[in-house]
Image 1 (tube, rainbow, N blue to C red):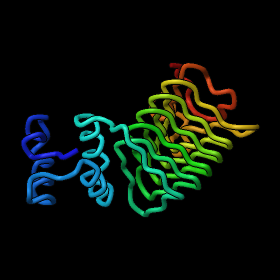
Image 2 (cartoon, rainbow, N blue to C red):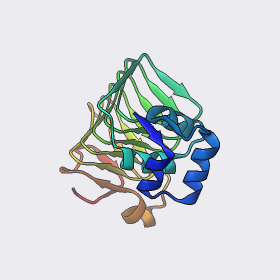
Image 3 (cartoon, rainbow, N blue to C red):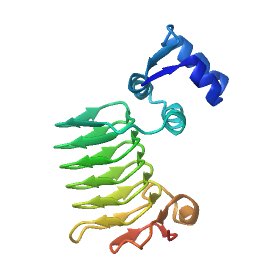
Image 4 (cartoon, helix red, strand yellow):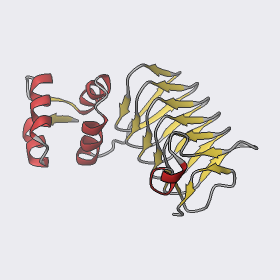
Length: 193
């Protein structure tokens, strides 16, 4: 799918977004995923989230052995990794994220659908999924954890939210919300669904 400057203008971005697009894509059009790739290189989660909301998620999948980058990783469809995912900043998927091993992000992890890892899930900031969040081991977030469905840590592992938030601020910054309270919620402020 091609994104053009005319499309962007119609969607009503900020002037900074238009300027960024013109500077990075002088032809004034580019493939949707290529724009997300460039935004990931620059760790521009704000622009990537805006673009995903306007252009929408794609019914595509990326299947790779692993993802390891010092920057962010953004994809408009579903991310499927047979081993692990490790990103320095943000991991963002228009649809779901699945990893055979662990998923780690220096900042946040967000998926339009579910997030699933064979081992643990860990984010320096928050974790958010449109559907459920499920890990074979523990789930750890510096801020809050939010799922449209359930949040489940495997075995006897725990769910930890607010690891980088003062306890006095948990009710605002370390919220845990899902349909059902996670069985192994160890830290964070349970807010419900």
